[in-house]
Image (cartoon, one colour):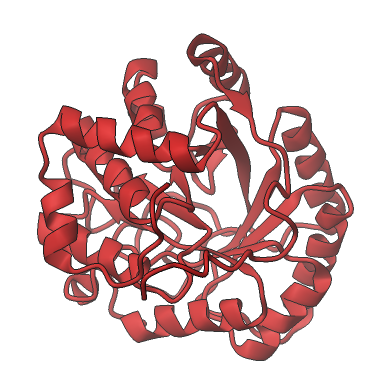
Amino acid sequence: MAIVRHNWTRQEILDIYQKPLLDLVFEAASIHRENKDYGEVQISSLISIKTGGCKEDCAYCPQAARYNTGVEVQAMMQVDAVIAAAKTAKAGGASRLCMGAAWREVRNNRDFDRVIDMVKAVNDLEMEVCCTLGMLNEHQAQRLADAGLYAYNHNLDTSEEDYKRIISTRTYDDRLDTIKNVRKAKITVCSGGIIGLGETVDDRVSMICTLANMHVHPESVPINALVPIPGTPLEKQPRVPIWDMVRMIATTRIVMPKSVVRLSAGRNEMSTVEQAFCFMAGANSIFAGDKLLTTPNPHFLDDMAMFETLGLTPREAFKNGRRPVEEEEHAAY
C-alpha cells in the first residue's frame, strides 16, 4: 500500500514524470489498484449556471469579457432549471453535479443566495454537489458547507512561476487562500490544472508538487488538456500530445494515491484508445455531457459505450462519506 506523502521535492516528481512511459504507466496502474477500485470511474456533469462576462483575463477562457469569442452572456439560471439538469445528469449515470459561474469572486447578494438554494436542491437528489464560483472567503465557504456543498473546484491552472503569464487579475496566493477557506469549512477540495498552455515540464511538475504537498491532498485533481478557443490569447496553441496527458495523470496518481484523478477537458479530441491509456494510468473520473461550461464534450451515450467496451462502471455518490476523510495517520509530512 502506497504511503501518502506531503513532502515531495520537485526533483522526485520530475524523475517520476520522466520515467520510460510504459514503466510509468505500470507503476501508476499498480498504485491505482492498491488504493482504489480501478474498475470504477466517477461520472460528473458540469453546467454553467451563469455564463460569460467575467472580469478575469485567464488566457484560455472564452468567458472573459475582454475577449471576442462568440460566447453570449447569460444571466443566472433558475433553480428549477438546475434541478431538471441534475435529474437528467443523474439518469445518465452522473453521481456529481458541478455548477460553474463566470465570476471573479463570490459576492454576498441575491445571486449567491440562489446558488445556496441550488446546492440544497441538488443535495436533496442524493448527488454530490460541486461549485466553481471563483474566490470566496471563510464565511461564504461556511454558507456553502451548511447548504450541503460536497466539493469546491478551484484549479491552480499552472505553476506559481508561470501563473502571471496566464492570469494577471488575481494572484497564485489568492487561489491558495480560497482552497484554505474551503478546507476550513470541511468541504472537499477539487483542484488541478491545465496542460498545453505553453508551459514547460518544470511548470507541470511544480504545479503537481504544490498540490501534493498540501497538508491534505485535494480529494479530486482534474487534469485538463487545453481546448484552444478562437478569440483567446491561446487560440493558436497546438493540441497536447496524448502521451503528455498520460504522463500527467500517471504522475498525479503516484504522488497522490488516494485522490480521485479526473480526466477533464480535452476528451472530445481523444479516441477511446487514448482515453483507455488515461484510465490505465490512474484516471478514475470524467466529466460527461455535451458541454464543459462552454466547450464541447463527449455525449453520455458515447461514454456509456466506452465504459462497456473497457469494462468500467460508474462510481456511486458519497463513496467516501459526506465530509472529507483525513488522510492516513502514518502519512509522511
